[in-house]
Length: 510
Image (cartoon, rainbow, N blue to C red; front, top):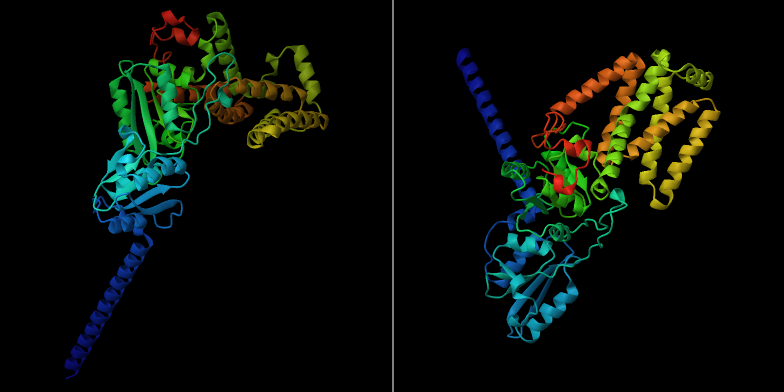
């Protein structure tokens, strides 16, 4: 009897436990259902973006588009009747669509005469059949016209061309050369390139990337000059972009380059159409992005980053001199502070006696070793340079120059840094300004500090160790399969002449 009572008691406990588990599961399912309902209420646009055709019933199509553009106050829905008393709906986006042309060329003629009286060239008018296509056309600045009984909407290209005029890029100015530069409009940029390369071999492959930004991106290349496998590789990388939204070309550059963690740029970012045209003729490709004037060019090498457009706009002997001067100061911008720290700290015997006495006299009251002194001045110089860039244009240059003079003089007078160190930092800064590509100068500015630390701890041995590590990294670096140190390593005899000197245009081969 006792065993029976225990058995019935355990069965009751098991039944109550199963009942509670069922209640918990039911509660969980109810909660998930309520969460899904809440999500569906908070995201009405997702259902509206289904690829369903337009119904031809004006009220239903209007409700669908209104659901797509919920809380979009800049999208206007204008209902009216045509001259034949047919209900119609015009949808457009304020700021993107030219409302004056819309009123003059579409709405007034359609209401007074009929749909066939719209004063827009028929060659530029297109039709859409789904709400998704209609939404994309409206967000491109086009005007959408829906008629009762028609399951096809008419799209009029009346987008407003509110773009700045082409002007010379401030960051890539030249004494001699073209004065026009890219703008934020993709169509304008494509025309600037086409104006220089009037050949059907120049190809533009345009696509839309970004889940919400829907940014237009054009891949440009010259057929016959570029390896078609490279074009296929670039298209593959563009199709596999991991960035959800594209607002600037840097978003694409960082996602498609071979090695993302290298300080050296693997693509050229330029605002000059002549630079793009010349690189396309040399077998490279360009990526133009709507909304930014910066165009990406690849594949590139270290030596192409050190070449200026003006090298090809001057006499050959002058270009060769400037190119070698640029190479020399590029090395100085990376190694000059480190060499000074290493020699003054560990290798004083390498300095001539008169110069050594002068440096010793200048540093006799300095409380810091040469390494700390160099780090203080380099960090201060980088801060002044960054402040000059971020400040308004009217005061930026004045603050950077005056700040450098005042701080340098005050630091020397106070005995914090020595005068030779001021000279070394100033020469290093001038050397970094000689690099034509801003992205290439950033690499030397970053690598300068670890090389200085090696110089301060190991002397010239540390400097050589830093150089070896950098060269190994550059030797392993690729830009879309092209070795970064080519045509030097590996050696390409036909192309190496455009590194050491500038060949004549008739004697230049790709």
